[in-house]
Length: 590
Image (spheres, rainbow, N blue to C red):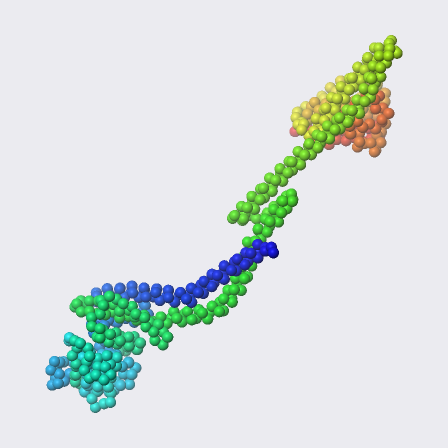
């Protein structure tokens, strides 16, 4: 089954567009999430490196460090904090309880005031309900461990109250569910008592409100204490909670005091998950819409592309059938436009060559017809003189009229002259009719040529006692002088032959704008209307009874016709009131 180019283009374009759409869909639903996560991790890692540099420049300046943390969150939508060597958030005094230790029970911390961070024990929202229990001067007990000079609290108990706050992750790791002594090596148990001096609560949005981040920080502290010295290289972890994926970045550095500080950052990948989910739902509608658009666009596109190709196909089919009447109307400046231009050029060239071939064939046919007519005409016209000559020779051979030898010899010589004239006329007529003769033009005065011809024919005019009346203008014309003389000689000779004695011949020239009309009129019998057009044919005579008596070959008017047609001029013959008028036009010299 033949499939048209429009259908092929339509199917190809639709398939290609659908493939692109499916590729985009798979890429966004399968690879986009991973790409987004990798890109975000790379960006955050670069930002953390910049944060480290700025942090070291801050040299433990708390406001500057807090400003860096806030800017980092704004730029990357990622929480970032600095942790000390045991995993406590540094600069967390804004969310802490200030305790005046009891010197009588805590010899190592006599007359000492310590700040216990509260983010490890409770959330900011829960503490809002409990803050009235943290009255100034109220007794408080701190259970935990001590590492070097740092306190790691695990349980806070308020005296004379049912309130007890516990860092459950750290407590279970330190004591176990049933243990009563710490299980970590290098840490000593800590039991402190004192009185609440002050309670510090943060204002506005801050990291303490994000329990997921705080829980990860607490877990990091547990891992840090349980594992001892950590790897000094940065690490990235994956974490999932409530079907939400997170990325955790931990990068240790040495601060200005030589202590190890940990940069802890955590970001959520929830936006990309939501985006991918929305895309999956959105693509259901998008595919339907895009499919419709693809079908329409592909059909239109196919028609647009195929239209010039169809035009080219139609035109080339006509060219193949030798119909060069149409050209391809495509003028675009691209490969199709160039192809159309080349086909049009090829069509014109083929048309030109075929026309030339037809002309050459016609010329060959014309030459062949001319040769055939020449042979036929010569054969026909030579029969009579050859018959006469044969009769004369027979008579001379028989000796029947020996006293008339001179008469018969003159008769044969006359017939030979006639044959010679006939052959010359036939050859000249064949030359004109071959289509290869080139007519050279000259400038000459027509009245001088007419006067010269009349002088040449004066004897014939006097023998018939004819009266020639001339009305000539001295006008220069453009033509082949020798051939126009030949035409005029034929017309005037014809007038002399067909004009009775003592009658008139009128020769005149009449100006007609840029042309001049040459007329030769003789008094005599009219030519029958049915013979007027035929007298220009070779060997044609209206009066057959006077064929030989007039002495012509029957080719004069045929030769004149060809000469005038080679000049591209108008000519003709008509009956007048008293006789017959022959005429032709010549162009004047301007």
